[in-house]
Amino acid sequence: MKRMILVSLALSVCSPVVSQQPLQGRYFTPASLAAQMNRPNDQAAQIYLMGTYDRTQDVGQSCALRGTTTPSVLAKVFSDYLMTHPELASADRTAADIAAQAFSQQWPCHTVPAIPADLDTQFVCPEVLPDDQARNDALGAFIRAVGKEAPAATVLDELHFRHFLLEKHGCQETLHHMRDAAAAISSGDPSVQFWLPVPVDGVSGVALAISGVDLEPVVDPRYPTEPAVDAHVMLTYSAPRETDVAHIRYDTVIAHNIYYCATHRFALVENDYFLSGRRTLKEPSPQTKNGATDVYEVSPVTPGSPNEAALQPACRGIGVDSAPTTQSPPGRYFTAEGLTAQMNHGKDQLAQFYLMGAYDLTEDFAQSCAQRAPTPPALLEKVYVDYISAHPDLSHADRPAAAIAAQAFAEYWPCRK
Image (cartoon, rainbow, N blue to C red):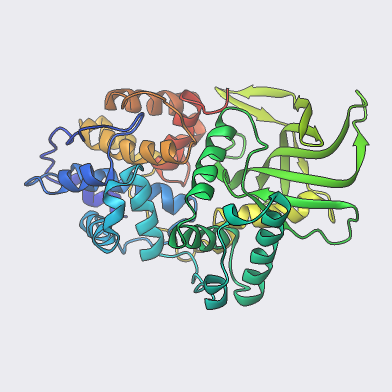
């Protein structure tokens, strides 16, 4: 186990290099982490990257096998990626987000298909198309083309293809719109999103789409080892309908669901109903508390339903069905038990830099929203420790500590009120 290597690290951890204009709620930009790495005998950057790496390994964003990496390799992969993409050094993103991108390319969970040449040469920026219908038609044609030319592509591949082409062709208006969509979700408005069409077999009069903005892995404390994904799904009906109880008319419903990938179940968090683009009803589901976590009733996915059609791309979007098997376990540095042991041996600085890497990634993913200057590292440690104390079953879970920390940060600094 790689976490054993860290016990012998000579931790000459200095204070982090602070950028001149630190990002809200974040510790390191790509440039400031690179500066940190250049400090003599300083291990802080490597430990920060370990927290990021463990998180990407847990969600299937990267799939290095256990025992195949070292902290110095993580630092080299990050540095090499910045050298290859120098424009990212000044990007308004966390170093953890850029590192996650580097790790996913260095240790891919599956072979990412190459972008078919025709998709590139025929690509047109959405903002130059005449109206929303034309943009929706172009998106549908793009998804169908990817499915035809690269049938092994996952939802994340489709997103990466499109994002790459948007940047290559200078589609700044659309890129800004996508960033606004992520902010809108955090503020409770699910309607302004980037929707990926999903085919529904055997169901007439309805179109299904899944959000490409906010696919997020989550941990349900009732089922701590089951992979689950938080997703928004949109159903658009060919004719208006009415809700059963309040008889509110709608032609579109956006369901906020949690899909449980191993057992093919789902929990409905909230439905938003719309008629002609105007919200007519917001209907949250009943919730209960499990420790500090809001949990919802879980039901089996009905065969042939839109939820069945949405579950597979949602789960594939977080890499669940392409992660290594138990025979080739994914690499990680710390389980919750291992990180707690470091804290108990006086290695609080090590633990805090590790948690900073996990925290920055949750902030960039809008999974946690501290909405302020970087929080004191000691507070990250306290939030994590308190969460483990409230959920003692997680202390022995076979998952990276960074994954559990991400859940703790999401509850302590929620993006959705």
